Length: 160
Image (tube, rainbow, N blue to C red; front, top):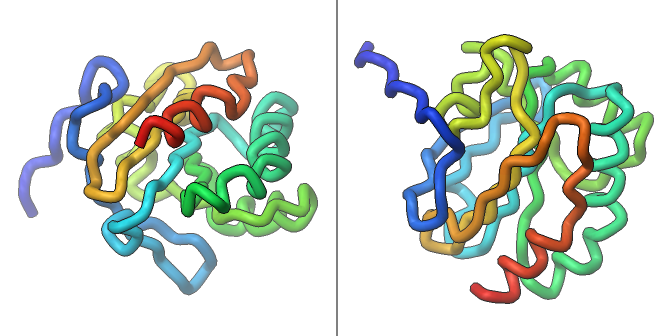
């Protein structure tokens, strides 16, 4: 197995290639970023299912899904929680987009995007818009206690 790619010291900036990944979306189904080439993808890294700010943030993205549809953008949430936690959280919050489990190896995808908090052992609150060609078009790191909303993401999608 090749040596792991060292984690960036900051979140990946606009213009960087978006690292490909394959994570569990359900207990028996994986989703790879490369499967979505040809359309924009919004990656919502967040610390944990069941936390109040994360629930609010994902709820805002869920409510905004009709705004993403005309832009043909796919929204994906990513945290280090297990696929089973994600399934329960999706059901409890009535979410209509996939939550991907960056569970094992813990935080590997978050680290690749510079969105892992070693001290907390969880993803940081970071947003990425990946363009149809697989490049990061926009990225934003939010303070962990602040729900960044969707305005920056929508503006970035409008610029594509």
